[in-house]
Image (cartoon, rainbow, N blue to C red; front, side, top):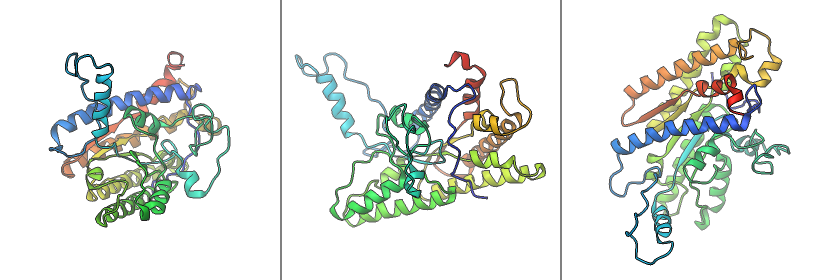
Length: 338
């Protein structure tokens, strides 16, 4: 079965502290990613002149710059950053990390109060504030992601004049199945490299694709959907969902992807929409136990898949992040995070 990209707009935990919990969860997740990238930078590629994900540089110490030059340190750091290659991040996901792909693909005009808590206007996100990918881009000191379809429209419209926008991040965030998102990415890559081959300036060059970070945050709807099938079908359904992700990683790797960041699903049984609409056993924190067990089983299989893929895909780094533990902790300890 395809891993669906559509999901409900629910973003908060059972305690209602959505933005606080999300921000803290992202901080923890980004710390995990940062450690992985530090290790990666030291052990894979990165020869002279080879673009990498941006890393912070040590500012000049006192006395290194010209004497008597006010602001020289800041100017030097700024100049170094200008010379660094852009951060390239491809996101394959659902509404948990969608920055407007649903609206772009369907021509949907999402009205207020969407966007009210941060952007002060509708942005196409299925949230009233920022989503996880926004915090990741902020931690990398780059702009918010543009929805993939908007990027395609921009690049197609501007290719003939070579007036390409200085896009530092790109997202594959479509309201479609994961395999379609991967197909769209492959097309995007081939189109971009074709333009470079014709002497035009594309949004991402060959080195950019090779050094990009490929993030997957998907499967939430599918796992929730499993709960509406006969229990004797659950094992087969979960295997199919994980199999779709395995195929996506393989295809991306065949197309040059080398740095993967895979997110497990959160505590689905704690989503307010499910807690209100669904019946069943509740745990000590008011979450639907059945849904959380399914989420944990899916995450275990996804983690095992990442272990397996590390053995079989060459010259690649695959980082798995347990989002369930992060998000469930905010529900269990919500009085400490509000």
